[in-house]
Image (cartoon, rainbow, N blue to C red; front, side, top):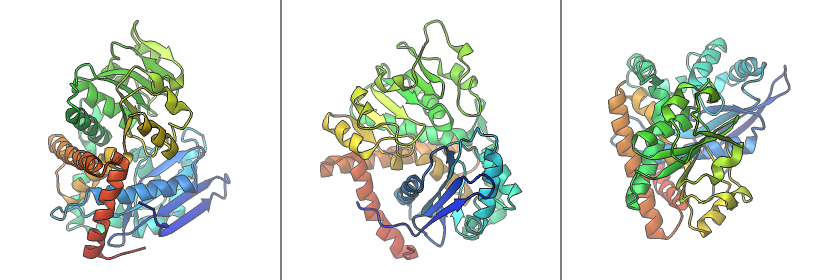
Length: 394
């Protein structure tokens, strides 16, 4: 499906550092769009536009006419800076201050690559904002109750990790398990390699390991940790810093330290790129021997690489479905479809993600296309339905 031009694209230049930030609003529904804010060196307007379009698709794919949560439009923000840089926090505050008119009225945002929700919340308060999602407040039946419910949900921990950090990984894992079930592949003995061990990658590894799969490789910024017999995922999780980097002192004698790109050729049936965009290109895709690539990150597989992978039988499960659970969990909680409860959240995520992944794979089989093309076809079906109910805003 061809992507129309976004509703709005904005480039901001910081007067202190000269660095640039971006905001793209792809589409509005009921006057509001949702999508996170990322910070990474090399971030571009084109990248943010692709992410904003992806958010429109994720929102549409979770449309439930009976739900309290009504999908928003799609938007995304980006800042070209290393989040570890000394000037990063001040830059974030100035960006949010500059974007304040949009955040107050039409753009609901939150954490994304390089930024935690706690950091976004702290910077938003310093920038004079009530909340990073305050544009949604006029759409709520009871704003006070909704804000309290979301705050309570963010305070929930499961085995030492916040529910907000686990929701997305639960959704990714369910997409993997759905694909395995459809292929009649047992969980035991199925090997997984994960690139990125932050919020999404770490949670995905935990859920897959607990389902009985073997995590044989994990890559972070320092390199790849590997063990053909399986890594101790819980020990690695406990040894992460705030950026998802693992303290190597927890590695066991049988664990190996390999180069950063070794995860690509790890002996695994499932690869989970859960870090940066554009990680798999036409060159390095040749090293991949996995059966499935599951996009926990946004846009990690370049289209040209995906075509080559498909030609040799590698299935890519696309980001717009696979990693959409985080966004859905936020809104289900805020709008009141679920409460601030881990059991209820995981049950809803598992049910929704299995249904959505299954629907996508059914459509791919029926149309003789890739899962990504099938997901795009589902979006093309749903956007007019949403527009018929709420109107077109372009």
